Amino acid sequence: MLKGGVIMDVVTPEQAIIAERAGACAVMALECIPADMRKSGKVCRMSDPHMIKEIMAAVSIPVMAKVRIGHFVEAQILEALQVDYIDESEVLTPADWVHHIEKNNFKIPFVCGAKDLGEALRRINEGAAMIRTKGEAGTGDVSEAVKHINKIRGEIQQYKETLKEESDFEAKAAELRVPVELLKTTLANGKLPVVNFAAGGGCYSRRRCFIDAIGL
Picture 1 (cartoon, rainbow, N blue to C red):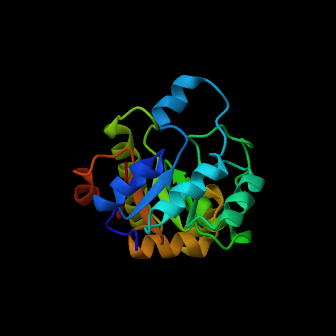
Picture 2: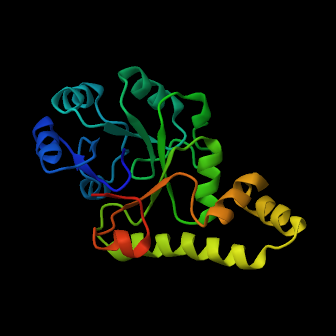
């Protein structure tokens, strides 16, 4: 349902209503926008559950909310709230700099960021239902999102051309720390096996870069 759409950041129910009327396919419930998070210099956590519930009550389109990387308790709270998607987000202060949430343990679909093919496939293997090509949150710098889109596309094309033997696939899968079958499926299809949307990227880039959706 999100493929081909625009996901809007909102901080109030009123903004969520405007986004829905404007045609957004989903909204991301935030206490403040990423640019303000960067400026604050504070620890950024999951948004207030009461605020998230107010936004959920205001619109009929899917509502997403962010949790800190590796913070499975925040994810459990959002699952209890019955949000539509959970974003394990690098915009918030990471709870774990090494391990991400094991998303296969949750029923609600997860969105995760990635800057390259290895990151994307590791998040998918953990259970991510969508990949957000990161960009640089809070800067408005479209070139960062486009850079990461091109990086993933370029790696897929490169590996399609260079990986020929089974041993080649096994070596690359081990290097990327992903199952070999996931790597093979991605290369055979020429794209990630889940919806890929660009965060921070301008709408003009979507068709040019073969992205499924846009986050604004």
